[in-house]
Length: 301
Image (cartoon, rainbow, N blue to C red):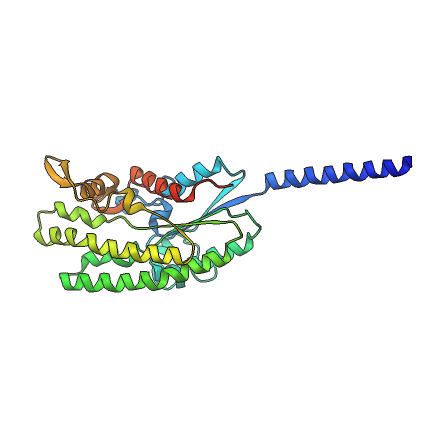
């Protein structure tokens, strides 16, 4: 009887030690925040030599990483965003070759998406990748402002919007299927840098600035539809920037719509040359983007 009791006690101690070891291993397990997208995802700023622009550690991804590192032990950041990527080049790896080479973009497997999927499949334990974020679509349409006529601009935007509408669901679906169980998935809609053109002395640019608002709204509706279909939360960056608020307010000695004021204050669009005009968010803008993500991500456990 004594031997039986001693044996049972030894088993109990062993199980307790195993449970403790297991809990310790879990607490020391590495976790990853995977970020992908275009230049916004790498905190791009119009600084550096000749103000051509550089990746920084002051983007919205860095703000999110700082916040969630306090919640999730041993959290590591895996940021594979690529400046210049469109929905097409992120999906297929075709296009944007010069920027991909310049900024050493991760295209393992052929594209940024393939690199992300490969990473997710390699870290597929439950809870190992608690968060994935993405921003994409701006480069599909931003270049359209350089078209020479309004009709060509509209045609270019229409083509870009169709790319966003058809490619984004494919990207999000691949990420969702590859992500481990329990991963929180979040994307963002777009602010409208072209609104700054409303301050131009050129009447054609003023018209373009006013016209851009309805175009961005259509694109953001497409993004929201894609996000919902693939179970991604949508960070309402457009809302955070008051993109649709045209209420006049005092700015620089004149009455200017609120959305235009915010674009001037949160991006480099109204900055003097050589830094401006530039579509990228400044430090304050990136922090606001991060806050929009935080609202839909909530806590990571």
